Image (cartoon, rainbow, N blue to C red; front, top):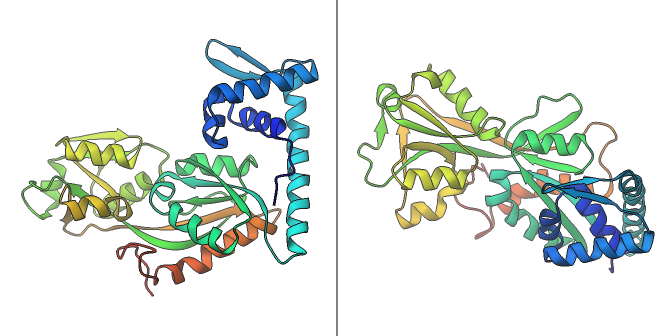
Length: 314
């Protein structure tokens, strides 16, 4: 089904929500100059300036803030129209913004999107990625309708349900000596961790605390902003790090990294789907949430859909 929303208005809304021409261009699969031209044309048509662009920062003008408020209403209303038209033909259609924490976005989401769109080809999914705290914030701000995060959320305003299990494992270079470490041996190493606010970081800290290990007791602790950064640092010999099993399937096959066991230490978590408790998710949001909760287990049994180490218990 063709998109009903005016294209220039959609470009404006995307830039306004990101406050970034570059990020808007990435989301819309346009070049940054093309986005700039669309905004300029809209400003010329309306006879007002919508954005202030000074010192490399983008902000909405007063007129831009007014237009954004109405643009969101228009987008939501047209999305409802698309969904109702499609529903009368027994199909789902429309746009759905989902927030996805980093590990899930990189290693799980492509499988989920492919499977969901196989069933609902007329749906347009718009993923936003960030760490767990950022996804929770986007959901509470109404910028996404559903979130997939790496662990439970403690916010009362959110409904949280696990949809799959994951394990965070300690990785090292293939020439790293022992395959199993004592607590004393682990503490003598440089430990690479995700940044504060990451769901992965919280899981590792909790597992270490249960084992009686404090971060202050390590030789050194280095914070990195992505799983890929941890893998690269480990490969470069800068230390050992905890990452999701999802993230290292290729490296294990190629012999670029190896898993090291730690006596008495296991870090597991559940990936969770979150939504606002009120109002309850409806339409596409409800369908995607239900798909994530119920269909992932079935997909895990299908050859080639998920890695063997996905953590599912069929």
